Length: 310
Image (cartoon, rainbow, N blue to C red):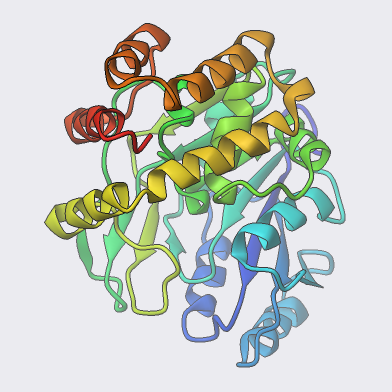
């Protein structure tokens, strides 16, 4: 790990056929104002020039700056969880990265400044907003600015920070390693749930430091605008949110010994709420303090409770 004055950062990037954009992301790492970082890439079986591009950077960067490993070939979420657990060296902080974004120069500096000021004995995760850009990096909007505080009661109901913005500390890495490759919905949502569930601290930075490229090949896209609202409403009616919540709750129960006792009780309250009567469900949301960010999120949570889709 790094010294007390200059914490070390491991950038953890997962790739799959990312040749079209990956060089711009690698260049943005080079342009970081924070210099004490190393990069580990887990490739999930690319058949394009991704590996060749990575090796070209590996050959011109200092020895040990870039490590390339083979991913498990089971999708991006498993690839990230596997990489977090199996990165070949320890660091003070671990920054997750997609292959097609571009980091602004202050991205690592901002994350390290926050995390280094926190209690290192706690599991910590830093995340935040992004700037939506098109394929040519022209700005097209901003992700939502969530203003309610991060908490376990929110994490159970909603994923608020993209994995491509996340930076975690070593204690969080150890927790992810202990929990194993769970069947949670996504690695980023799982990290938020896990950190808060274990009594750690999540922080959502309202200042964006990532150009989040929107293109047809992106696995996850923008979550704002009328189209996104319609998609979320349709997913709610189809029961997808209910299935996702059940999936995350099952994953939590599989690692119940890692949870804060009070938060384990919250999970059990949530499971009881799902099968209760309509009036009881609505009452328990308030009593248990479950919430989603923003008025749209709050409305969708009440609707989900009303329709027994929670």
